Length: 363
Image (cartoon, rainbow, N blue to C red):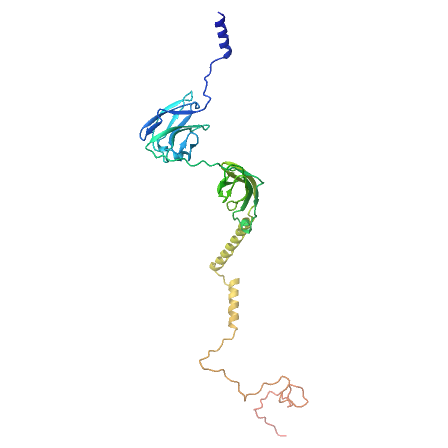
C-alpha cells in the first residue's frame, strides 16, 4: 500500500509528460550508401525543427566534415526534392540519384529553406561518376582596421557645376589570420541619409601576409549633382570594417546657370519678338519711321552726284589764260590812297544807260 501511494505522489510532483528532443541536432541517414544514376535512395532525418521545409540535393566535391565546396553550384539542383518535417522533427522521402556537375566525393545535402539555417550531410557513392581529390584546404586570413578611416581629396570647379564628387578612402589594415590574403575585394557603399547604401566592388592589388599591415586606398565616387550628408561604408568578407561620414556641398554653379538662363532667354525672345513686330506692322505716313526715311532720302539728295567717266578720259585742266582770282583786299580800279573796294571814277546815279546818247539844248 505504501509503494503505490509513493509512486502516485512522485508522478503528481513531476507534472505532465513532455516530448524529449534529440540533443545532438539534425541528422540524416540513407537506405543505401551506394546507388547508380537513375536509381533512388530513401532519405530519413531526425532532430529537425517541427514543420520545417527542407531541400534534399545530391552534391559533388563535398564531405560531411568540410561541407559542400562551391555551394549549390556543385549540386544536381534539377533533381532535388523538398520535404516538410512532422511534429517530432522527422521526415522520410525517396530521392532520385543524379550525377552532380562536379566530380565526387558526393553527399546527400539537406538544408532548411525557411527560418533559422540548419543543414546536414551524409556520404553517397554515385556509381559510374568520376572521383577527384578535394582542393587543399587553405587557412583564411582575417583583416582588421588598425587606424582611423579618412576621406582625402577635395572638389574642383567642375564639381561646383554638377560633376560627380569623388574622394579617396584611406585606412590601414592588418592580417590577424593564419593565411595570406591576395588581392582582396572590398565592398564600398555610399548611403544618402536614411536610404540604403549603393554598393560598388573595389579590388586592392597586393598580398598581405599573416601579421603584416598595409595602407589601402580605395576611390569613392557619387553620382552627378549629388549633395547633402552621405555615409561611406566599407565591408570585406561579409564583415563591416569602417564607416565614414561625408558632407557634400551643393553645386551652386548649376543654380547660377539656371538663373542666368531664366533671365537671358526671355530677354532674347522679347527682343526677337519686337524686331519681328517692327518688321511686319504697317507704316503710317508721317510716323517716326516715315520721317526717318524721308530725312535719309533728303540727305542723300543733297550729295553731289559724280559725273560718269569713260575709259581713257581725263579731268579738264584749268585754263592758264583765265583771270586770276581777285584778292579780297585789292581791286584793280581803285586809285592810290582810296579805300579798298571803291573805284576812283565818279559815281553816276542817273538812271540813263551809258549807251544812250544825251541831247543838249541850245544855250
